[in-house]
Amino acid sequence: MRSFSRSPVKFFFLLPGLGYLAAMAVFPMIWSLTLSFQRWKAATAAPRVFIGFQNFYNILFRDARFWNSLRFTVFYVALVVVLELFLGLLLAYILNERIRFRNFFRVLFLLPMASPPIAVAFIWRMLLNPDAGIVKVILGGLGINVVDWLTNARLTPFVLIAVDVWEWTPFMFLGLLAAFQSLPVELYDAVSVDGASRFQAFRYVTFPLLSPIMVTLVLLRAIDAFKLFELVFGITGGGPGSSTESLSYYTYTVGFQYFDLGYACSLSWIFLVIVLVISSFLLQRLRKEV
Image (tube, rainbow, N blue to C red; front, side):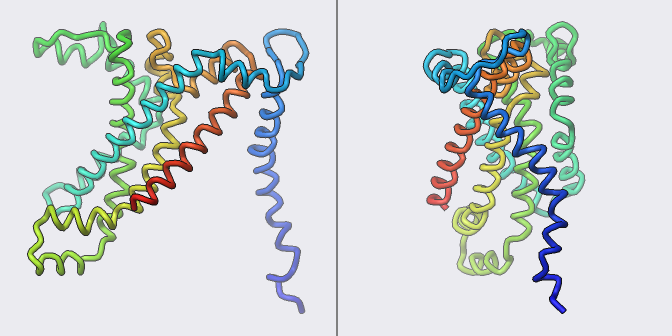
C-alpha cells in the first residue's frame, strides 16, 4: 500500500489555504497592477482608459507631493528605527539584570505595543490638544508655555516620531530581552576570569552575539514603519500643510478621497518597489557589518 507521504491526496488539503491566498493576496495584486496602467476616476462615470506608463511618469517627474511624502517617510523611518533600537537595547540590558520589580517593569513596558495603533493615535491627539489636553494642563501648572504641537510644521513630525518611539520601542525591547536571556553564561565566566570589565564584555561578547537579532529586528521594524498610516490619520491628517504626509497616507488620499484609483495603484506599486529595494540594501549592508 502506497504511503500517504507519496500520495497526491495530501495536496488537496492545501487547496483551501491556496484559494484564500489567491483571493486575498494574488488577485488584488494583479488587479492593482492592471489598474496602474489605466486612468480611472471612480467618482465619475468615465470608463477606464489604458494609458501605459503615464501614471508612473507623472508620479516620478511631475508630482512634487509624492517626493515630499517620500522624503518625510524615509526621514521618519530612519529616526524611529535608530531611537527604538537604542532605547530597546538599553531597557533590555537594564531589565536583564537582577533588579527589584523587574518583572513589573517588563510588563509595564510592553503595554504600549499591545494597544491598537489607531487608538494610540486618537489618544495622543487628545492628550496633545492645545486647548484642553492633559499635556497643556501639566505643563501649564509647571509654568511652561505650551506650543501648539499639531500646527507647527517644524515640531509636528517630531511629535509623530515621539509617539511611534513610545509605542514600538517595546518591540525592540522584547526581542532583545529574549536574546539577552539566551546568551551563554560560560562566555561571561571566561571573560571575567581574563579580567574584562563590564563594558569590554558588552563590547566584545554581548554586542557581536546580539548583532544577528538586531539585524532582524531593524529590518522588521523598518518595513513596518514604512507603512506609516494610523498615526498620521489619527493625529495630524498629514498636516500642517503636507509636512507629515507619509507615502501610505498620500496613496490613501489619492485613492479614497480623490477616487483616482489608477494613480493610487501606481503609487502603491512604486511604494512596494521602494520598500523592497531599501530592505534588500539594508539586509546586505547589515550582513556585512555582522
